[in-house]
Image 1 (cartoon, rainbow, N blue to C red):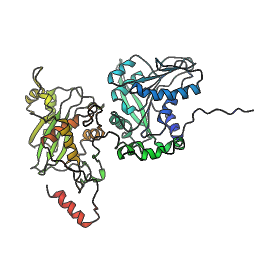
Image 2 (cartoon, rainbow, N blue to C red):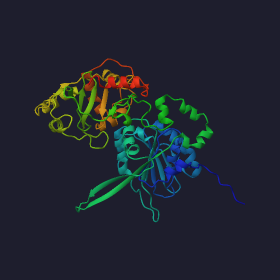
Image 3 (cartoon, rainbow, N blue to C red):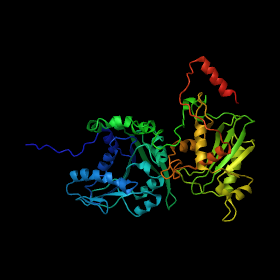
Image 4 (tube, rainbow, N blue to C red):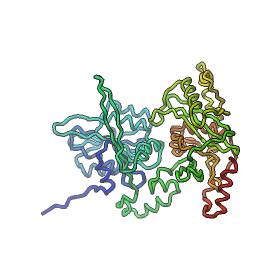
Length: 484
């Protein structure tokens, strides 16, 4: 007589798609309720029959690990009755000798707790709560952990997340905007051997999106969960129900709009196509200094109504998020001069205002950064560093009037500003200010420019007028060009 098999856990179609991926990195999720944590826990079990296998799953804090560990108590014990869990070491030990650890990294320095260790499988649950530095450091830990004749392990990294958290920026750039979902992304690297030979190697990664609509079992178990997500405030609803990466909990500048359909007409968008700057508009420059962290230099054109246009930028980033170029002040000054001599929007123009982070005027260790740059004939005035009034200037300038016209717009060539600003979130310690652990350098730099040209509070009009009405079209055209 056939015995009926007991099913401990059965993957759903999206989970299967994620768990079958051959890429070195895979990100799964992007919304609430997609079965992300279960998929990660089960994936870690794949090689527990191999004696030397080692896996680890991360959350950013110990308390947040508890839910994962609690769920593993059912999944791991049910599927491997002889497996044991050591609460002190936070590790599952399997009969073969394989082990799965649970770890945390709350601060960047916590990554050194894993120095010298090796893992075949590395998982990050809610990877947007980790920094890029933490994530990339663990690449060096993803390597073979031993050898058993005839039983090789596979080394790979898996991650899950919702669109929220301080790491949203690098996760979005690495997985979401780098290619269409379900598309393999390839990185090419070149290695120079001690013998002088150049070797070209490749690494691949992929983003597999999922939402609550992909989790039929959850909808059956809790039919009201869908209604719960749908009842959330707009930003949270768009992120957690639909997986939007442009609207999320804690987002500071919800007014921000980047609509390529309006780059040319410059209505209802903060990002626009470049245009020729009238000669009688003033140009100003602003700076947020950085060495190990990125520096940010921005140039703004100011029209006769006080509206500002960010027309050029120089962002001192290596290409890795929030990692600076480490160039000296004199080199930075020379680079600024080169920009102003050769940039199509700056060459031949007089720079009327130059404001910078007041910290560059500090002389406690000798010459200030401002002094060094002044020797290169690049001059600065101390910027107004009041944080909350500066943030409010952002809100006032981003607000749209009834014609879809804000008081600040950005040329679509200013890629780093466009990347960083919409991802800023509020600080847990200072609820009215942004989280300064994020990539906030171009935010600060533009804030100094705003505080040099403060405007009165403006309400944000969210409703577009009907442009099919000829009278409205005429009014919009008049208001669009009347101040040029």
